[in-house]
Amino acid sequence: MANPSDAKTFLFILLGNKIDIDGGNSRVVSEKKANEWCASKGNIPYFETSAKEDYNVYPAFLCIAKVSLANENDQDMACQRLLRKRSNEAAVHAYGYMSGLL
Image (tube, rainbow, N blue to C red; front, side, top):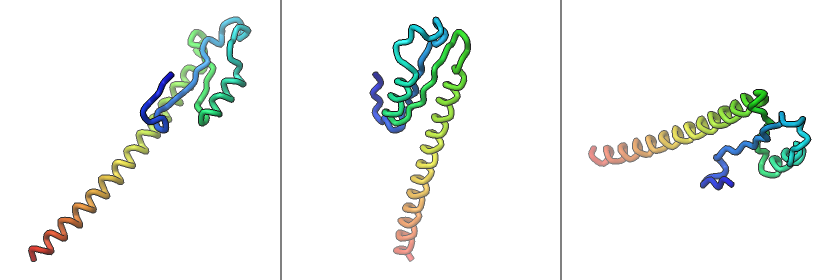
């Protein structure tokens, strides 16, 4: 089981693969149970997939890409806020230093 250092920003996605086999008669976990588990873990995205039939593979990867980009954009905005704050602090410090010279 994955145990990332920051589970709040680590993307989890659950795939129920090989749904094409025998019409789903041999499945071990029901779709309902998988959805309930995902809901109990903070609404983890869940896709039932079949690579053989190319079913839901693209939407699953698209979900990963969209969430990853959103997280990256959030991190970029946080970095920009931090840089602006530090830039403002440096400007205040420089102003105070320059005022002392005048």
